[in-house]
Image 1 (cartoon, rainbow, N blue to C red):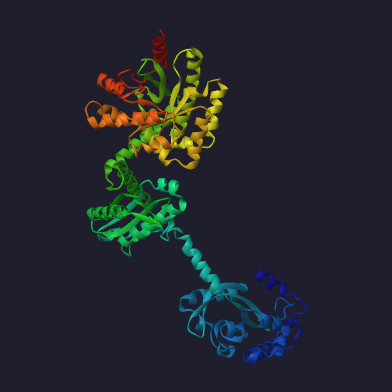
Image 2: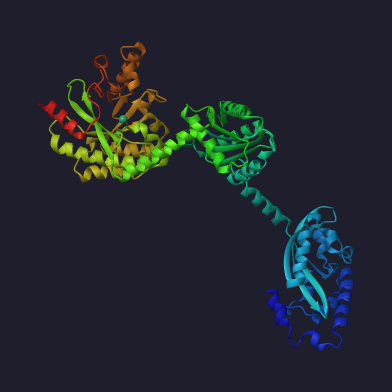
Length: 612
Ligand SMILES: [Mg+2]
């Protein structure tokens, strides 16, 4: 643009170069006069005359008015960078009288660090006609103010002058620095963010060949953070994250980096750690720190920390690879009961490869429609009749036969494939319930039980979908029973609880699965919208062996009945299990003693046998 203007100016008829007899001498004299006069306090008449007499590219500009009113400092300098005119704004902006600036070189007022920027901007101005640079101008009090300085080259009678507008942008600059800092900081905790983390990892790896100990990467998160967030609210969750960050910073040296990746995931990068053992000790101290209670307002609670650690002394490692190793180690810490730290080893990679294989197997099985549903009968202990059946997913593998969920459920959950699998199981079960209802409506067989997960409940459309599917097939709603684990109930959000209530209000029966395995308290039975309770097999297996188990089962049965809930025992394998359960008043049972899960046709036979 400046070049366009410079080009357009050349043939202009009123250009002083074309009209004056001695244009060069006059312009120089004008500039000198301007500088001298204006500097001592703007002899505005001279300045105005100079403005008319030289070739400013905008003829409408009234320089006098402009410089008087301008919040910015206007300057005129010769091509060598020496000030010839400075407007009075210099006093307000930089505490300097114009006379203290005029005659000096601009370099004298610039921050030494900014000289390269200033000089290259100057060179551009002279070369192309205009340039804007940001540099710091020294205030009379010795501090520096950020300026944004736009300079234009002006040819006045053969003399090159540079007219500049110097704007104080200290505030804007500070704001910019703040933004820059924010772009690198996690806003919640003030620690580094992922961008900085990756940057530090790269730098640290580059330094690895110097042979001072190892580089340690620790990946950590809070155990059951979601429970806190869901039950106490995000504000409390946020406070916990802030306290955790503060707590972690106490352990770290100033050279270590603490970053938050999002959610409750933090990563620590520690350089020059003596060895793997020292890294493991750091991990240990961190998980210990998690055991201190967190206090938020009047609430006080424990939220333990799991840590995964990896170390390297090899600069060829990649930042992503290190994070992945630490993440795998964290995964093992979770797997081994949380509230602990684990160090990465190659076994973990093998497991990870195994998981990858499982994921591929799952995807293929889904594509090739090799999912199956097997049904395990549930027997009424008084009549001995089959009264319902639990739908359990299997995968048919051409080489290995039927695969049980234990071998794939975890990977399915992590990869999100569980949603697809569960949906398929649910629709098969509804289909099957419909078939059995049509065929056996006159018997005491009352339908199919399906396990549902937190993900189902989190989806507001789920209850409507289920009820719609039942209604579409003309299946009475109580022919479907859903089983949720205690964990799902306890970790469930309010909307999930609403979903569960909606199902139950519509007539679908709701049962509490694996009761007694988690954070059980009999109080939950009272709290949740339930129709039946399934006693976990671990209690059943302790029956008649351990008196304590009998007492627990008796208590569960007693309370459940008092609340109007039916009780089903899982994992009944021996006659003595069965005898004890009967004597304790349990209503129904399932387990190998009766039948293993199998094809729907096996259920048909049992129902027929019961009717016979
Ligand atoms: Mg179940």
